[in-house]
Amino acid sequence: DTAVSQTPKYLVTQMGNDKSIKCEQNLGHDTMYWYKQDSKKFLKIMFSYNNKELIINETVPNRFSPKSPDKAHLNLHINSLELGDSAVYFCASSYQRLAGAANEQFFGPGTRLTVL
Amino acid sequence: QQPVQSPQAVILREGEDAVINCSSSKALYSVHWYRQKHGEAPVFLMILLKGGEQKGHEKISASFNEKKQQSSLYLTASQLSYSGTYFCGTEPGSQGNLIFGKGTKLSVKP
Image (cartoon, rainbow over all chains, first blue to last red; front, side, top):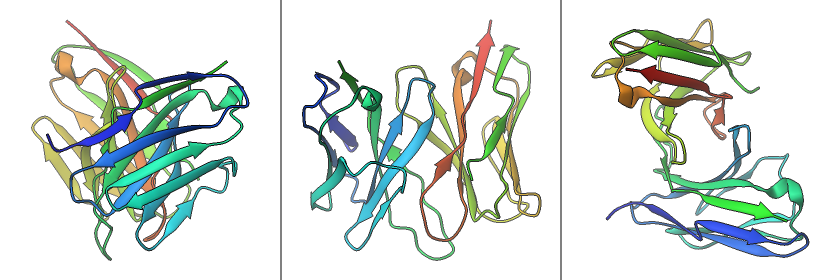
């Protein structure tokens, strides 16, 4: 099936650990995103990335880093995990926005991260 | 910079109508609407690009007042399947990321 997939679906870990979440899309999109949704359901952009440009939300700690081995994958690596990192992380993808246009984003199923 | 959505929550009976509003203090390039059901990913509903543009899909439609920097989502003759949290996302310029509002929780009862 064509879709945006994420692994793992659930991730439980201890404070201070380093973890990665993987994201893959087979929709042929050229822009991918990471969002964080906290316990109050606030959906916040963390990064957007295409082959040319990484746009970082300035409020994201540098413990978070996106890594893209190719256009279909955008992984999220988190160093020194903290309690406040507990949230649902969504990957999304879209076509690259051209001037005068806007594109819908397709979201993955989410990864629920719990930091103990 | 985050758009403001209202109301925060609304409860409807099947067949009733609802309006969800989204406003921004910044000039907007576009407004996106998504619906998220509990435990699931947000799902795209529609994008509005031009001032005054209205779009619709079945009984869900939206408008965008570029001058007022506002958008409204209209749900007509609501169905149980409409239940979920509705998010508006705004793009403040032609470049940059989507910024979502805090969401409006819609519950449709039989």
